[in-house]
Length: 267
Image 1 (cartoon, helix red, strand yellow):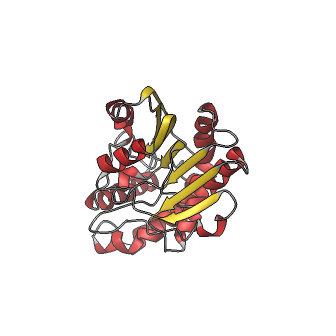
Image 2: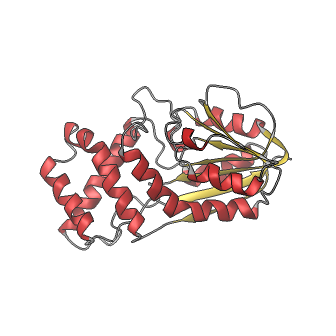
């Protein structure tokens, strides 16, 4: 969740205290989706997994449960602040740049990245490195957002509170794009996996609306980027305070961008 490589730096810096709150909300929203796919791909005892851009600890821990003491989970990220605590046993945590450094040694039964490549400048090179790390028959599972498919924080824009929320979300997207994020990346994943030579490529998408975790994620995200929103003239402090109060009051039906999951196997 935190691999990056732009000249301007990753917008949602892992070193900020809000990052831990965001990782918890993302885990609640998306872990069930991720592990439904992981289990469908047959990841079981004794297998080796590479978790790219791990961010928080929940996915490495879930993979470790599945591979057991005879398996291995390598969790990599540019910033391992939030995964360092789970290192040990079958989990190895490594600081690593997926687009610039060779993959960890050894072939993998599963390579997985969630909400990572959308932020990576050289996405094509990162993808090539992940494919090369697969053993024959190994599976690549990529999950990434597509804000362009559904750009609104409040799809039901029914009043001024919702319009303010959507305007702030537009500002967030502008900040992401300025740092090199591809806001239409998710929809390209099935094609990119086929072009990479993978077999049996499939995909689906998940689009949560009105989950309590959506509100937690939104509040933490806005607090983390507040200074940038104000500095870039995308919102005022008063507007941000009003929006955060609306989120806390539960008056908004909040959504996330669709997360597209795509998977395929190396021949």
